Length: 150
Image 1 (cartoon, rainbow, N blue to C red):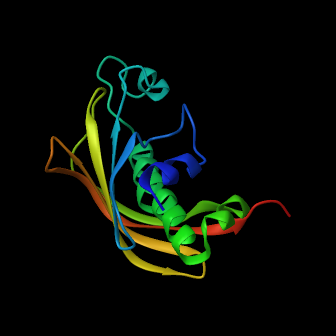
Image 2 (image 1 turned 45 degrees about the vertical axis):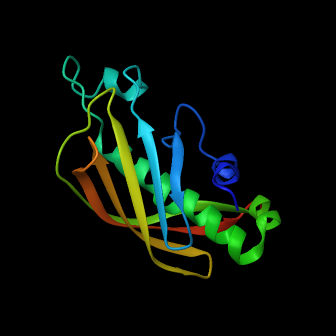
Image 3 (image 1 turned 90 degrees about the horizontal axis):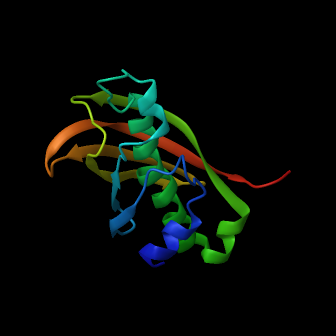
């Protein structure tokens, strides 16, 4: 499955989509990027006058790349692209550590390394970097595919 096709299947959309591009992708590893725009809705209330990106948003960005996008790819290569219309990836668990803030206008690089993929569940070691190699956050994050509808 091509990288551009994976992005087409990511269900999160504006204003809650935190993947601009996927730059590397295979069955073991994914790398994505996102630029936090200066006018993101959450900056107005998260430390007005000195905004930083909330940790929960950083976690969501890591989940969208390391679990949702990578899970879409895993599903497509395991069961075929046609199966993607029947599933949604939902977030199930995380354990994160944060090391530095992300400010409006900064671009982050998100890396996901597969820990396991089985029975429509993906666990990934996720990490986020700013300015190329400055570690922002890292940890384990999991999600699972659930059937759409009843």
